[in-house]
Amino acid sequence: MLAAPGQSPHLARVGNDGLAELVALHPDRFPAFVASLPMDDPDAALREMERALDILGARGIQIYTNVLGKPLDGAEFRSLFDEAARRDIGIWLHPARYDTFPDYRREEKSLYEI
Image (cartoon, rainbow, N blue to C red):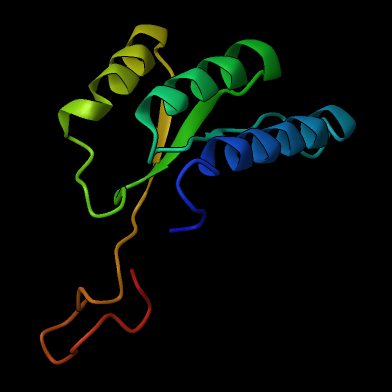
């Protein structure tokens, strides 16, 4: 977990604002950005997705495959995927899991958390 409960919407907002600023300052280097979302708060994630796309100009979203140990196909994330499909935007899916999941049978835990 990157932030305490309740802090992730603020961190996502700050990060997305910073990425939008970089795109605006250096369009020759950064033609676009994808938004980060506070997935531990699905309602806030939907609001941040809408803000990043509509106001900041994000071209898609990036989410991780592990949301505090919950799978992405959980009912609480359905509205986010429905909205992404409605908008026909790209979703960058970043694999992530805890180090307690081994990558190989000979490991007791994942060496690189991949």
